[in-house]
Amino acid sequence: MRKLFFVSFVLLLAAAAVHGEDGAYIGVNIGTAMSSVPAPTQITTLLRSQNIRHVRLYDADPAMLAALSNTGIRVIVSVPNEQLLAIGNSNATAANWVARNVAAHFPAVNITAIAVGSEVLSAQPNAAPLLMPAMRYLQNALVAAALDRYIKISTPHSSSIILDSFPPSQAFFNRSLDSVLVPMLKFLQSTGSPLMLNVYPYYDYMRSNGVIPLDYALFRPLPPNKEAVDTNTLLHYTNVFDAVVDAAYFAMAYINVTNVPVMVTETGWPHKGDPSSEPDATSDNADTYNSNLIRHVMNSTGTPKHPGVAVPTYIYELYDEDTRPGSTSEKYWGLFDMNGVPAYTLHLTGSGVLLANDTTNQTYCVARDGADPKMLQAALDWSCGPGKVDCSVLMQGQPCYDPDTVEAHATYAFNAYYHGMGMGSGTCYFSGVAVVTTTDPSHGSCVYSGKNGTSLMNGTSLAPSTNSTDGGSGAHRAFGDVSSLARIVSTALLFSVILLL
Image (cartoon, rainbow, N blue to C red; front, top):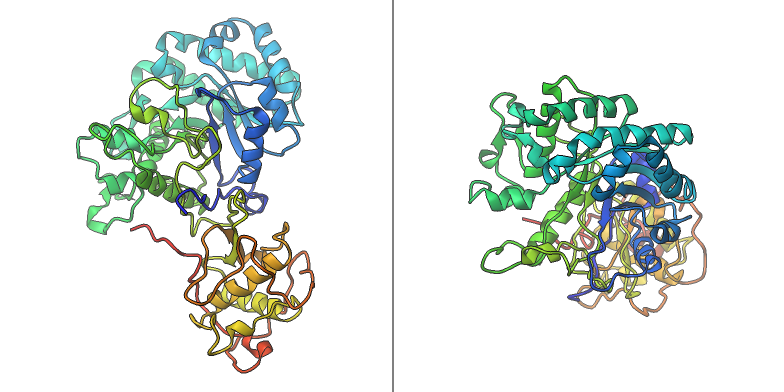
């Protein structure tokens, strides 16, 4: 099970419908500093198999854009730093760049934004004067092509441009950057574009020399007396990520910009590093950080300053990049190795509707953690009735009777239906109370259908597209025969295999 991949990202179309296209979502960055770069079609196959619906490219490679065509995946393309000189000095060059790298591919490629450079103000300050002209010229080109309503322009910043970032209410931008930042924020405000920010709690933790607790960096729950409190606002901070995002909001407010949203274009945690100098770059910590991050973002938790306000976030990154220079950990930020093998297992219970990596064909359909008990009951009734699942093993005294809960019994019935229907699209939904996982819910002598599992169905009844059930039947417990057994009331169990402490 070591390489059995994780319940994948929470980026299903269903999630998009719930949150809206501008709401909470998780994307990934796709770097290519690898000794063997996967073909663009391999990359898009991996993205689609994981239902990753948002990606950021570090360039506008035509082969990659061609592979993304007609996938529906929402794409941020980038102007590399080395192209800023040409674009920032010529409106015509910017227009040609948009024509070649955006207009030629849109709308077949769902391009949503152009990231102009990367951390220019901190990494290449000599290019800073070209940043705003480049952004304006590109915006002119989008307007001329009638694409400005679909595609936003911004530029990713290092969080290091924010000074005195804790408490967040005291944060302000490096004043030496005012000549670029102030007009840039006004530009973002006028075009409805986000402030793109790269947030790395790993580095904040490493540089703090023990001042920042590891749990605070990893989103682990903290007792109230361990939470960081902004003494000016009395807001409580339980993680570094929120504190940095709020510092950006306060820094913008300091210069009277209050309606530009923050988008986190890079964040993550390395899963391997030099044991002597990078002891916290481990698979366990990478799993903890990214799993908690995904749950935090997808639940639309927001931040203490803006609770409930979505913070769209892109994980750094899809693949390990073995040719990146620097410390050992620089090569190991990926969710996958260059062959598409998961680097470690994510645990995403509670982060919304999930779909498992199906490369092993060993997937299971389980009751969604926290699903409404009445809806679970109705779906269980349908599965053991019109759905023709053989639920006899759920009767008292039979192998799958215990634990005697609606969630556990529904999990068995959902999984039997899912495998009986060949794991087809939409066969693990049940009005949103079921999800797919790679974690085998079998226990004791209760064995669930999994890889090459046999059908446990009485027939071939196909669930309605909405998995409609009679929500009024079976809100009570009953025992005896299979039909009454299908009304057993329950609690969530099998899908919640891991609780992060």
